Length: 429
Image 1 (cartoon, helix red, strand yellow):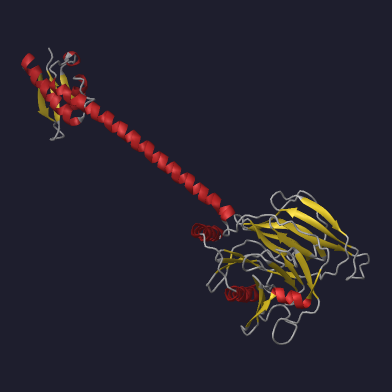
Image 2 (cartoon, rainbow, N blue to C red; image 1 turned 90 degrees about the vertical axis):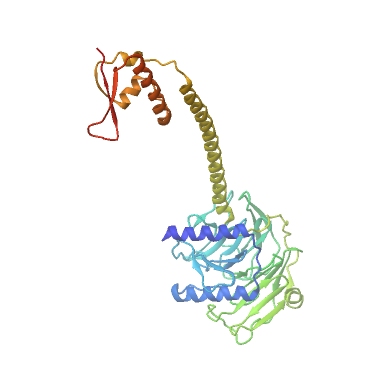
């Protein structure tokens, strides 16, 4: 079953890689995929649920990783089902993790579980269909970051440190830890400004090109980051985005906040679609964090389809195999041509022997009298190496010459057991 699943994933993503289809998901299509995934996990994986932070888009495919688990589901745009593609068990150690993609891989940073928070970085392994621990070149605090911002090819993890654990909204500093995703190097940048940030939040994934990052919890909007201006805003007075009463709970109501370009789309339980203009929302209800650490906009490669990093090895292997097959075919053709040419040359030489009357009967005349098979006679006549048709004609020529030289020396008879074969009696006295 596992082999069949791997074959399915390979074929699916190899096809996606070849077509090179860029993501064209609309908010409604994302909502459909999330609704289908929510129904699946709600039916078979209780109490696991789905949040807006649990999906990533790769071309026309959606990869869904329910928060707090290592489960991975695949949804194809326009489909009516999701397919589980991982071999993981329920883990429960990475609630409130930050899910992101980099160079076609799915990563998760930090999380909380088993009464402990952490900053571990894990990556989904497309081949083994498991999550691998990524070993960083440096150390991160052994607590979950309050915010993780992906800027180009780096992750900026923010940690707050309270002077008093009882004062959850008061802290002395925010420390930045930068993870270079290319080298996995970790660097620390202290930031001593006192700012109020909201902890324990989820990031609403970007549908289109990354412009805004929006965070929240239980459908609320907490922080907004502008990747172009590198400004961070905190929502202090923004209204509840959904129609109806508060308290959506554990996402059992299929309410979604979906971020695309300059809009945050609000899809309520009744499939009502509203939109919030993010720049206007920021201007009306949010407060800019003053002197916020500027994040260097490092450049990341253009996004590609899921599985290309792993399955390009399959494609490379396929190309190498095709090249080897072509090379073998060329060698065989050349060898065959050489053999054919050599064979033609030899056949020409063989037929030329029919025009030669320089027969050598030394071996034949040394035979004792008795019965010999046709093969034995041809060996004695030294013509057994010739092709059959040439050998028959050559034997006939030589027997005619022998009978002229020594009449009665050799006599051909029908084989007593095989009427279609001959034997030869030599009378050498």
